[in-house]
Image 1: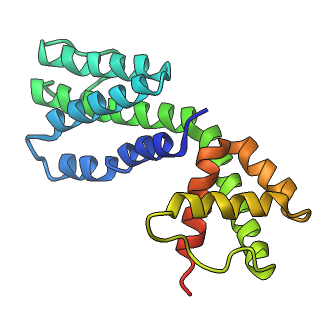
Image 2 (image 1 turned 180 degrees about the vertical axis):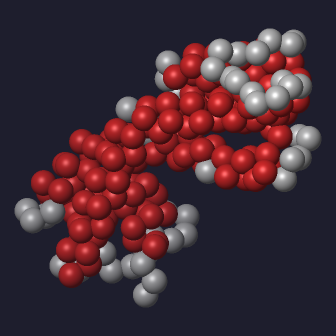
Length: 189
């Protein structure tokens, strides 16, 4: 189970793909090195989170490296002459496509779990506000203590208790506080 901050770190790396593809479209000579750097960064994040998908990303990066050494990976075909640059660009595109699909599948359950916890937290905060349990946004030196106090008060309320348990069951107590904080501070009053 990924923590929210780790899930978002992976999602942010996936969000870099449009800019990388734009480099290829512009025929930027840094496209292949950028893909290699992106794969390396993604691999490190996955490895730090103990996700076996890191091995798949490393294998993709290995395919890209092999093109630098003159190999043409399986599944890469060309109309006309296959130059080293064409092979590297085609392999880089293939690496991006395969990696994005694999990582998206890998984090899908975690993203859905966090999304459900966000939805429940939004409902809990709305009810808590109407009951007077959330009267001000946390602030100052006691920021975390204020969040914990709000969460504790919500957990003691008969109407909100089950929702609090559900959120903690989905994301754990620390990430529950993070979602509470984001939900409260997102509302402009």
